[in-house]
Image 1 (cartoon, rainbow, N blue to C red):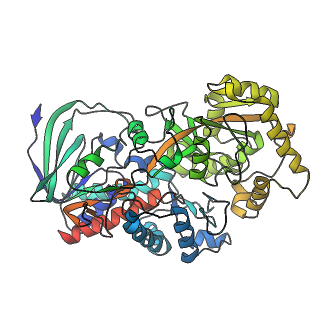
Image 2: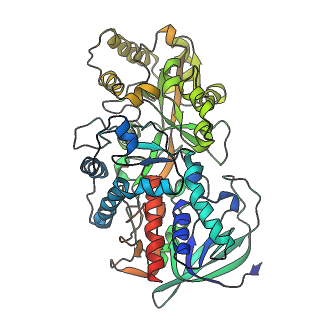
Amino acid sequence: MTSSPAHSADLLVIGWGLAGLVAAGEAAAAGKRVIIVDQEPRTNLGGQAWWSFGGLLFIDSPEQRRFGIHDSLELARQDWFATAGFDREEDAWPRQWAEAYLQFAHQEKRAWLREKGVGFFPVVGWAERGGYTATGPGNSVPRFHITWGTGPGIVAPFQAAVEKHEAEGRITILPRHRVTALTTSNGTVTGAAGDVLAPSGAARGIASTREVVGSFEVQATATLVSSGGIGGNHELVRRNWPASLGTPPASMVTGVPAYVDGSMQDVTATAGGRLINTDRMWHYVEGIQNWDPVWPGHGIRILPGPSSIWLDATGRRLPVPLFPGFDTLGTLAHLRATGYDHSWFILSQKIIEKEFTLSGSEQNPDLTEKDLGLLVKSRLGKGAAGPVQAFMDHGDDFIVRDTLDDLIAGMRELPGGDVLDAERVREEVEARDREMDNEFTKDAQIAMLRSARAYRGDKLIRTAAPHKVLDPAAGPLIAVKLHVLTRKSLGGIETDLSARALGADGAPVPGLYAAGEASGFGGGGVHGYRALEGTFVGGCLFSGRVAGRAAAAAI
């Protein structure tokens, strides 16, 4: 084992995810010397954002206006704060970050990204639809803008900027450097120290060796923690699981690479940074096991349209308004109360062709590769999109049958399927289908999906024409077993509006900054309890930009 000579810089950035890249680029553009360290091989530059769908929330955008969507800062503020549900003393800074982020999303965010060459898919998606009252959680209007190029498309300009600064000598990138301590002197953070890990040729997302071959130290005037969340560490997820959601699942699939391990949480706390809202987290309930996994326990999230019939593990339909795509946290809380770790979608071939999109850059080759021909074929052509069809053909969680009896039998053969009440399933599906005989209905989900098609974007690519699921012309029938999928930490390092990390006394820890998911996307929890979607990648962009500029100005 060898000891590396000490490195020095104006700014040390720990973690090269999107927030870290943005911050490093901003500081280098201001003439500062920057060192970026990360525990992974360089193949992972861009971090978790590279794997994302690239959704971004804008307010009153040209894309919205083209579709006749009337959005405003006031409406978005109403939605954000109703969704966040801020109710703690610790929410003082998160509230201020939320207000600042809304201003950013309404004004500068889109133009700033367009200047960097980032484009957006013209159809605006409607995520987290809510389904409560105007003052309840959810988006009142469609706001989910998909990046043309998905996650890699949003990472690319910031990676290019960092690499240009690297080539010109302003930025140094040190892969395989794992921080184990922040160094301090008289209460001021002066850099970091840690382990040099063995070189690794692992491809992006593949778990790499943790063999230690040396040590290192970096001295810096300012240090930024942008190391991500905890979603790859199930032990830490369960330890921080909120009491309001009952007991944590015994079985979960993992929506982020293994390196999203939360290892910098304790390191930051030891150096004086305050962690808040660590029991707030954002996990999905539409997770499926990846038939072609990249990392351990790799799960993919279904981004569902509103038509699938959602049943709990026993076959009972979920209550209003817990329909696909309406309230992630509310659905998670309900399903945790059932005592089972899984649930089910039942749908038709007609629904899956129109409504199923899979989250992640690798599951959307048309958008990721900016392939217009493939996009038209996959989104508007007949048949399920290629990645969805691959799950239907190979996925352990998919059952495809011609009759309801055969479908239920196939569901019962999967692990945990023995608790499914066949008669209950049949009753729920047949009762729902009877409601389709008239244009009026008491079934709130049917009313909502008819309402959804009043929005041109949904009618065009997102919501199937209402039909009976058991109609043979719409078949075959499909069942999907759904798992809890780990994803985002909503709490983290408390920061002020300059991204300075705060201590237990509320004062900034000298020399220490935080951004991205490590800071709860700003302030230690800008989303409160719930997110409006399109705000995680955006939160990394915003908090990274704030941190990079503030640190550069202070040095």
